[in-house]
Structure formats: structure tokens, C-alpha cells
Length: 295
Ligand SMILES: [Cu+2]
Image (tube, rainbow, N blue to C red; front, side, top):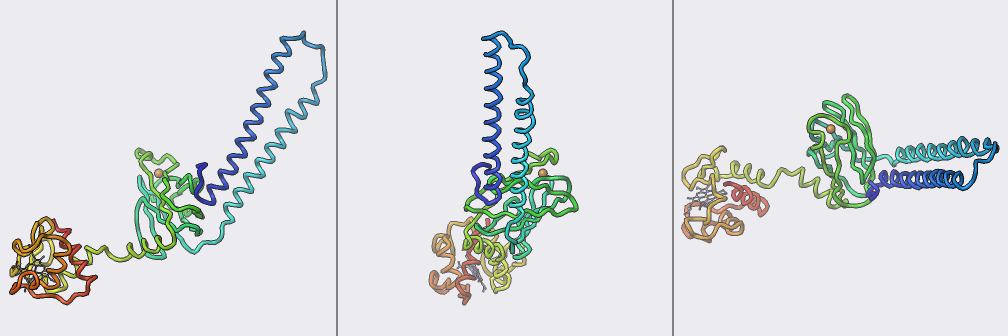
């Protein structure tokens, strides 16, 4: 919490240190007076009478009022400073569930869980919801806690000032697995974040390869069980990724050889009964990723 990596946590940590110093000073002062009082009493006979009213007024009323007043002022001004964050153009919906976190990016349509990605040095508006009971969203190094309340949306604007991965956890007892309701916030540079969004938007390469396999002629000659592909002219490819060789021991099964094979099997095995394909490299690579994932 005190090793802040975000604007909000920095404000909170500043206030914490001030309170800590004041509390230590008051403690030391009071303890010193107690010790002095005890020693004096031992050293001398108690004096008669003596007017202590002034001491009670200053030490018992004026000082506490001043100290508490200053602390109250600082607490309120810190809270308003937190609210005064620049408006944000990146909104993320985070929903607490028993016992995990759902994360949605309305801007890009992305959805993830238990991992919030945000760009560094940019104000982000987290909209906190709950799907069931009370939870509390807390990433100590980035910001203070904000409760997640069913049927209500609580905003939390944060601005990370450092890249890195920061641990967060649920800070409101929410049932049996409350202690195992953790998450991470991954703060990335603007470029890394943009890349993460793009990667998340594109269906994974292997899934793209699977679609290609069925759309291209491949499926007419090869079977992959569990898919539409049921051709019997060529070998069944259901467990192709676990094979050591391609083309009846023509070349070892490596991604490079497979790419060559799909592009032009005749260059490896002249006269082969599988036709070459004219797919662009990106689609060939997607097919390779898919076939090598079959086990
Ligand atoms: Cu919780």
C-alpha cells in the first residue's frame, strides 16, 4: 500500500504517513508526561493544590481539537483530490461474483476474468458491480478500496503511474472462498495495451486455422474427428500434432516443414496425391498452429 504505483494510492499513502507521524508524536509526548509524572512523585512529596486548569484546557481540549481538525481537513481534501481525477475515456466494467471477477471492456468488446489490463498514465474508469453479495475491489498499490454492491454501480477512477503486475483482492467478506478471490491488474505501456486488445479481438490463431481447414478443400480429403472434416482420401489428422513425421516419414514434423508441406507437398514428396495450396502466409501459419495443436 505504501509502495504506490498509482495516483490514488500515492495520495492515500501521503495521508497515511502524515497520520503516522502525528500519532507517533502524540504517543511520545503522552508517554513522556506519564514518565515525568511518576518520577516527580517519587522524588518529592506531593505539592499542595496547584492550579492545573490551564494544562487541562490546552492539553485536553485545544490540542486534540486542533490535531483532529487538521486530520479531518486533510482526510476530506484527499478524498476530494481522489474524486477530481480527469474524466476518462476508457471504461471497464468489473463485476464481483462468488468468488471470481468478471472483466468487460465495452469499448473493444473484450471479456476476461480475474485479470484487468490497463494502459499506464491514462485515467481509467472502473465501473464496479456485484452479481451476488457485497464484495470490495482493492488493489493496494493502485488505489483504495471501493465496495461492490448488488444492483448498484460504483465508479472508481484510477491512474497507474508505473507498469507492472499488481495484486488485488476482495476486501469484504463474501462467503466461504472470500480468501481465494484475488486478481491482478496488469499495467502496460500504451503500445503493449493496444497489442493486447488487438490480440484479444482476433480469434486465436488456432481457432482461425480450424475454420480455414473446414472452408478449404482440406476437409474433403482428411478426417479430424469432432469436426465437419470427414474425407478419407488422405490420412486422418485427428492426432497429427503428436506425430513425429510428415508424409510417411518424409520429413520430421516441425512447424516449418508442415508449412512447406501444406504450401507445396510435391516439393517434399514429388508426385504426392495432395494438391498444393495458394493460401497467404498468415493463413498457412494459422493452419499450422491448428494442426500442431491436435493431439
Ligand atoms: Cu468477494
